[in-house]
Image (cartoon, rainbow, N blue to C red; front, side):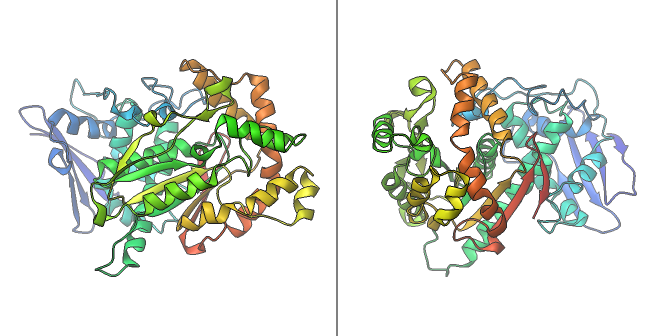
Length: 443
């Protein structure tokens, strides 16, 4: 058996082994402690040898170049649009198998890379904690490579940062929140799914984050549901009625601001999901979806026949939205930003009972400059057009985003200083991101 060792000075060392059949696996040994963590083909639920190898082999490569800075996933992706479909990940898996014995010089680098992440301290993780859970880090990272169809042998720095500094740490936080949620119920009580709210500006990557978390829950054997406030926008007909009843108010001319959502549908959906416990195991329901490409990008509720179906019992509901958790302010405060916000602010008073009261744990993705929403939204529309779906032109995007900026200016400061409406500070994670959507701080 060929063996290659890493430096013994790190908190864990690694041995790469290959048997006569060419099957490779890693063994991690803590030092100077006696704790052992083994990661091999038997460590994972999927039984195929080539799948197990592909999940680990990305650890055995030198760091790839960082890419051109445009997209964290574009450099070696197969081109799958993450947000395009709820079932995107069911496509062909891209495996990257080594043609010669792997080099393992970067296993220690990966460990150090994980520990350098901006969320590690917020999550209360020490280097020893990371080492103790290294098998999970490896598995989760490999699952994400599979989901996003990136080459496991050639992860770029942006891709590594997105997986190991962002998605996986947030997933660990979600797991901890679920444990706390379960512990609040007595043994004989039915445990409803934990609803985790994700409040983040448009285009900052919240949908992709939720998509990744949903997949990690799925592959680790827990049922989850994805939900967006976009799913509750009024129909095209309802939007027309809203526009006509608020003639002259540009903030309510199109979908987006408070008043443009079907709150009755919100309550109906969230209540039904909350009841999907073990008592109703096997219960299925369809979740509403919204088609943003309809009517030349103005949008309409999708045909119910296309709505995805979830089956209980659910462990978690991942609920995301750009204005989730916003708190109504005084009339003076909102009109100082934009007089048109007064009606929006009054509409917002009904949103706590429709959305926020169901949410027991919160993730707030914080940005420093709301103006970057324009570039992010433009990128999303370009991706939609490239996927063959009609989308807004660049000028239409500028006009569209301009109708959200007053709400950002009015409500984000309170969201960031006080937390979402009805939130518990002990069950709140704030992740500050940069213009490239990468986390730079967690608190």
